Length: 218
Image (cartoon, rainbow, N blue to C red):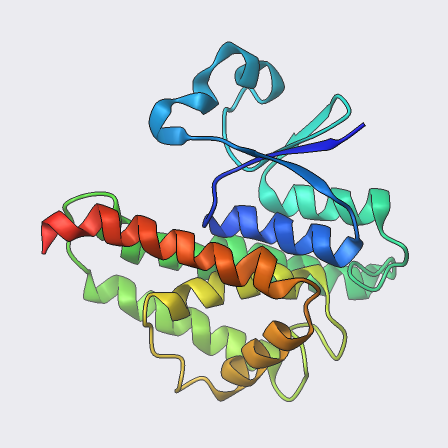
């Protein structure tokens, strides 16, 4: 049976899952969900996910949402080894910390700064830009001299973080002060399986959305 994946092209959380599927080696049955048309509010979709959010995964009747939960599920269910999500408790804890950091600090700072402008009539708040730079300072420290965010092996943490960081890059955020982040970003782009298909091209869909929503505000 196919693994149905309800998603929105360009969404960073959706790209997390697409990158993970490539890395794990599973094929997803992509089901574009048009939020503008309310396709996530249909009775059929709410039966799958009462919270009616995307991304949502339906693996032959088992439904799970929240992108990082989907990522770990795909790895645990279909991964050929534990390199992406180590079974060693201490190594896994570091991966989990980076995943939570991405969700609660780095990606959250993106949403707080950019979304009021993209999706509303807000303006950029300098105080929220400070939060972004603080988050990147932390990430730069986490990476240090390592190849990846938790050491020298690609993990799920890198796949989540690269979705977020590449979105900042797409928005022309200046990454140059963060040398470790810049080096890491180039490394992940070059080594994450299927990066261009799972994250590079979908970023263009995100840019198209931004352009469409902001063109009348300029």
